[in-house]
Every structure is written in C-alpha cells, then in structure tokens.
Length: 335
Image (cartoon, rainbow, N blue to C red; front, side, top):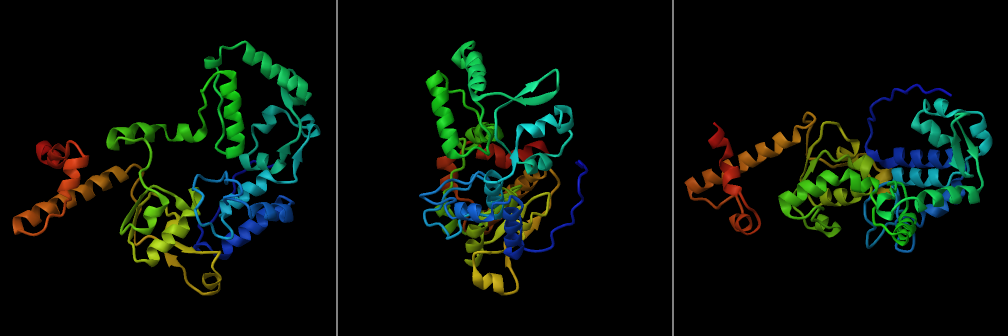
C-alpha cells in the first residue's frame, strides 16, 4: 500500500453547496453502508439523537432537518462502516509496517472486530479472548493506586461512550479523566482565567442573533465547526460585518452556499462570509489586536480633544477590567 502524500489543488468553490453534497455521498458509498448510515444521520445532533464526534458545536434548540455537516457525516460514515479489520489482517502486517502507513490508509482498512495484543517476538498484533483482555486490564489496575491511573479519552469518543467510561473511572476510585479537548484547551483555561476570570468562552448561540460585529482570529470554521456557517450566514444576511485574521485562506470564511436551502443550491452565487480577510503571518494575530487597540485608543483621544462622544465604553472598563491605564499608556512609556 502506498504511503505517498497526494498533492491537492486549492479549492476554488464556495464552502458547502454541491461540493459538500457530493463529498458526503462519496463517503457513504466508500464506507459501503449508504442506506444504514443515512438513517443514522437523521438522528445526528438532534434532541432525541446523538452528538456528532466531528466537532464540538452545540446542539441547537431548533435543529435543521439535516443537522450535520460534511465533516460530521464523514465521521459517522467511518464509525458505521461495514469494513472490518479481522485477525487475519494483522497476520499479514507487522507493526513496523503499519507504522509507515498514512493515517487515512489505516482508517480505510476498517474497524477492529476482536481484542488484539501486540506480540513483541512477532512484532504483530495477535487475537486474544475477551476474558483474557479484561483479565490483563484488571491485573494492571489492581496493581495501581487509583489516583496513579489516568483514563484518557479521545475527542472521537461519543458523549455516551465518554459518560460510561467516566463512571467506570469513578467507581475505580479516581477522577483523573483528561481528554483531547481538555489538553487542547489547557492554554485557554490558563490564559482566559487570567484575562477575563473564567477559562471558557462567555458567549452563547443566542448571541449570534444579536451581535453587530464579529472578529475571527485563526478559526478554521469550515474545517473545525462547519455547522457554525449557518449562524454566520444568518448574521451576514442581517448586515453584520465579519473581520477575519487568519494565516490561511479558509474557504468557509470566504463564501458559503447552504446545502439545506433549495433556493441557494439552485441559484448562482454564494454568501460572502468575511467582509475583511487579513492573512497575517503565523503568530501575527497578537500584533493585529494590539494595533486595533492602539487605533481605538487614539480615536478616543481625538474625540475628547474635539469634544465629541467617547469611543471607549469607560463605564464597562471601570467596572469589569483592571490595568487599562497602564495598557493604554504602554506604547508611550516604552518610546
């Protein structure tokens, strides 16, 4: 099996649209379960269904008939695939060989269907019984103090799976339950806590309906949270400016055609998402933010000199921030 990386051309079309529909159809056919998976997708991100493992975008209170994106449909297709990796597969491949395979090639091989254990002498995974697998796991856990064990979960684990897994860990006697999102947001939990007092974002889905301006910094919405494009499109239809700072040209933040809208699918054109798109260098977002702050502070100073209304919301600054004076004067003290 080839491990060569394929070169791809830049995508020249709007995000969503017929390209997204085609990609979903191809994924369902490729995984050899188009009818079964299509039925499952109808329950994805619905109140009586299950959460998608493709991203962390929340379940909406009023879901669309098809409340999934291209990435989410692909993730579900991979989970419900009829492809299987049986013990005979591992008899034909050593671990050293499989380590040279591309991630996509390993994914396309299929789902595991039996407990396997690595045999160092053979450098292969060999089948064991479930009783043997659970016995080995139990032996290791009994040899540890509960708080010496860590129960890591993948971001691809469903909410239902993660819930059962954490129950098992707590019954065992520990709450050491890091997951991939926890690790990804460790810097956020520290930085935001120092900056605004809490370690998570402070907006809700409902805020999208009331905002009059959006800034995007380094968020690849078309890749990481495609269902957010519906809310961004609705905001743009209300005339909300969206200003983006991103080193790459993210198609989802350029233009979008809603594949759930028959009108948009049949008409030419697309919704422009970003009204301004600034491709800063990697790490340049901090400089851009400081530049914006400097321009706003200077505009506020001019307004005061001219006797005009203040640009800055001084009441908010006094009630909810600290150290603003030092920040506003830092460029003068350093010059």
